[in-house]
Image (cartoon, rainbow, N blue to C red; front, side, top):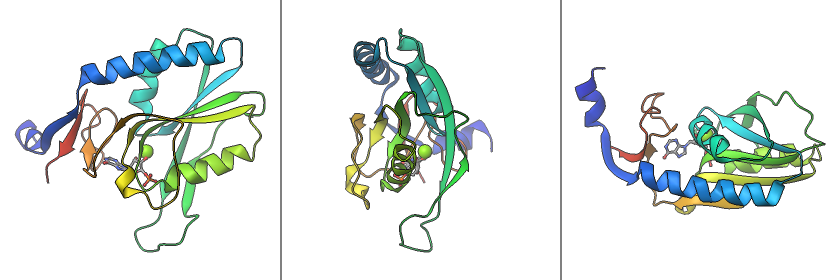
Length: 179
Ligand code: IMP
Ligand code: MG
């Protein structure tokens, strides 16, 4: 694909770079205040959330560690629940940590519902979920993040870590995907 074809699929900007920066700074401040003096672990869900994690991490000024997980959902063919496969698990025992899951987007809610249940069973000191984007209209499983920075309508979006066919993660903003 050349740059012309690439650009043709980049639609309207839904959340600008500046809006993202401002919200991340506010979130980092509240994390600094809430977790100072407590062992803090930020858990990012690959691949989509790595850009959000990196920018959030740089704004946090208290001691914190990071770890990664990756999950795959299999819901295309079946509507049954519990079909989230953990492709890569955490390297750490989380029982001594206050954990914040850092996610790119809550769509049907299935991925996070599964991951939260899995991590809760490992008895972290506390567990919260922070998401950059939330598409509540698409929810299939009842799930609410503790913090969601932007609520968006039912658009398929790209950029800032989010992909279509593994592309467009490098855009510094969130845009609608033009098919
Ligand atoms: P879930 O449906 O809430 O389990 O979300 C599963 C995953 O689908 C998210 O973590 C994203 O990686 C991906 N996803 C959902 N909506 C979008 C979108 O609009 N653009 C890109 N990826 C998406
Ligand atoms: Mg994701």
